[in-house]
Length: 339
Image (tube, rainbow, N blue to C red):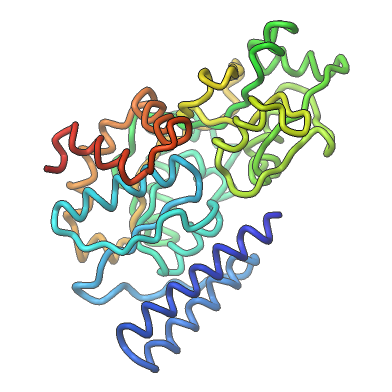
């Protein structure tokens, strides 16, 4: 399932790169872009990627985002705000999962996207470092590591913490006194029936479900997982709410809006297993040097994005069915960030 999702994202990336090449600089530049696209594909399969040179002066800032609800929201906020300040952009939103988007950024196929500080532990195989569980220390560490290794600049983060979590149906929680992940471990260990809807990334990444299982002493078998393509919690939460294929629990994020409305309860993590996942724009250093206003334009926006605000905006998309573009525009106008 992962292979299909990633391959689709990469093929889309390649097609968009080829179209941009044809429209601009002719055959020679087309060949160069195709070469970079091949590098992206290789990197997504685990091979090394060679960073591409910066875009020429005057080229638009290529803004990407992940494929989930909040990724679309943050991406739209960034694109619309930059454009309102006269900074030309190219929309590459909802490009793919974490691996695809970050690979594209490092290789120079996109210039900027919103990422989460806690993912630095995974990116740099540094999950044993306690810094990731502290907001300021985690931000400082990923900022230094990415600048040194990849020439990526982390701009000012939002106050929200979009950490990974597990939500269960409220009727299940009430029947078995489930309030924390320790309670869930007791329930599963005692033979309780649990089936979790999650992305493959959540199920497999060492700092996600495996970290919860290790810390609290439970283990879900393969048949207790319903793995859904992509990383959108709107799909996992709805699967639990509707009991799709017997699902009664779901991967969730700390800023998910639909949890309570769908009759679910996020279980507390008393051991503090998860790092702090503060959303922040990440931009290639060459691009920021070319257009330094990016940092000053985006800082006031991200300062406003606390957990209740993101929960409310995410709910407008995931529950009310509103388009991310419209939700972003209404928020920017209400805050006086655009006219």
